Length: 301
Image 1 (cartoon, helix red, strand yellow):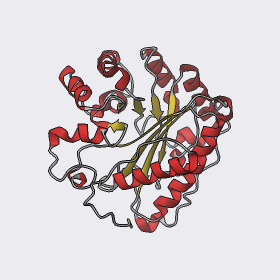
Image 2 (cartoon, one colour):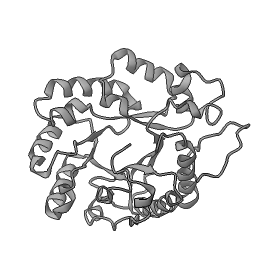
Image 3 (cartoon, helix red, strand yellow):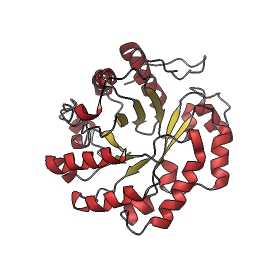
Image 4 (cartoon, one colour):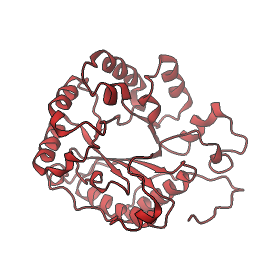
């Protein structure tokens, strides 16, 4: 992910501390005895360097989704950003993944970036119809707004979200900096998402701290965390764990966490650190990836 990417020299000058929670969070986090849904994954399943790490040494491409789904319980599915999946593809995903696995499908860029959500009824119907065929394996789809989609286009976003099938709840990622500069507009946006039952995406990238907005519109946290293969990664995760722990205590119902790091070669290690901290600090029951026995794990960074 190149969005918000900066050099290590610049990184060391950035204040990486998380912002305080948005006040809107108090309206939607309510203590509940319901066990939270916890989903942790990566943005890809096909990385050759994972052979001999979390995959067998001789793992072949056709087997990688099955192997990945045995290690993680979800995936940030970016392939749907570029192509609406066919029936054959949907069937293959369903057959090759474990029963509790979920796909968090990304809305097509032709809808979000090329057409800016306008005159996309046919495309949206097609996309939604296809991903709904995933059934119980459909996770929380997400709509990444174009970096040039501004608050002036909020009515367009609202109209688009109202067009979606009632049973399809999604998360929305905002990238233009003006969304976060005007508190009144941002609160109105959160209220609109809340009314429709849609979540926000929180993107933790070091070069754009405004998009780490700490705002929940529903009791679901959808976090895209981007590491830098730098010691500060662990400090950032540790702070996040304490924030998530607080949210869970206050009534967070779902956590969707996706771990990005450069070419994703070391994503399994970083995801494992995330999961282990969630287990230790939040007392959650999550399965961590199992590394191949012969692999000697080296300390990162």
